[in-house]
Image (cartoon, rainbow, N blue to C red; front, side):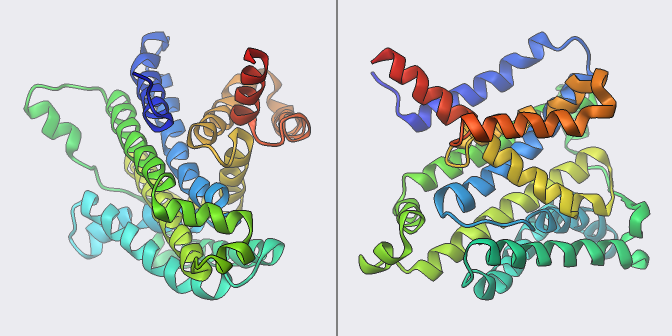
Length: 318
């Protein structure tokens, strides 16, 4: 029996997450792995926005900041459990994305990019300047999730790094499954239609404005959950999570691996998350090396790493 592309993608992702710890020389790599999964979740949302719907956003780190600070503020001011605070952050991000997306998604191309960038900068400024609420540039502590202690009570004793590796990996697999289901749904087909041509999609009855907004809201929720995961595992958060450079990193990861591929975007997240660790020898030239890698990929593999490699392998097979 031949597996579908969705099942194959999920099996590969789950297998890599399960097998990778066997090759970890120290517990530090569990930490790196959990960061890859957090970034992978964020870029999976951008695959829906950029790869499926063909829209660009340079401000999605703002939604990650909302999710992160929801986990820090809601337990203190509203008495919510950190898990419920993450859910609140996701709902808040969805509501803000709906309100912001309605006007800015009327724009196209670099006009949309600049408008979304303005939103991201606005969120970053609020997080940095409202020091009485957010702690300002110094950041603030985030309460313990408590799930690890609950698992320990039933006999599952994991180190902190191993727990967050497993938990973040599970959330990533669920996020990838939802994104792949969306791809094969009527909504996914409508998003790909407007990506190809908005005029043609409108001609066949696709509500272009509605589906753009749907993609924007869904991707905002993914970014928010990734920010919440980052805050909960670090137990501390600063405004950098909602900063401009984080937005650029998210888009770069998506494009590097392949904006039209969930697995490709996660590969891009893995490369850009681990590259600074690999390039410690060239610490002074880290940004230069990173820029060189990006230039070479965009010149020779314009579809992204994974789609380009897959196409070449299939070409040789034929």
